[in-house]
Figure (tube, one colour):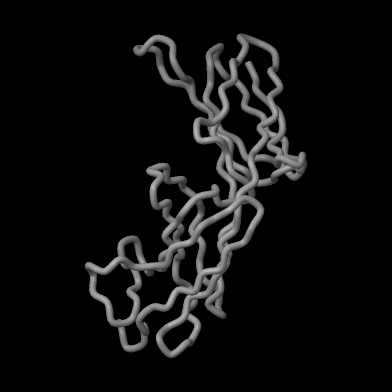
Length: 193
């Protein structure tokens, strides 16, 4: 069978380039898990083909809106098409700048927003600071976050005068439809190889 539809914002706008991943849920534990994926088109449309008749959990990844934590559950037919529009919630935005202790912009570092209380961690394409040190993280679920800058996977950039044990980054409270501003001051990277 086929599941198709559109990925839409709460306001009904199509969301392009969202990744839709579907996998079977429930059923016989020994049954082979089935999965499919697609990327939404300019009009928000997606299509998952050649699915076996089963319940599927659809998860949507995009930086433009917030998908439900538990995804969407859709029953795929043995043959034919089921149409299911995936309507996402609005999120908030974290806007900021990364500078060193002299106030110089720090470019090309990865900026993460990690939920403080929520263990739910979503994967997204890395956000990098621009040449002028600025960054923008859109489609963030409402809640409290710690915003951090890092070079590599584990290489968090420190606030000036702190050691590895200090809590790095800045706290930010994200609200739906609003932009919160964050300034990350990190130790100067000059002279480091």
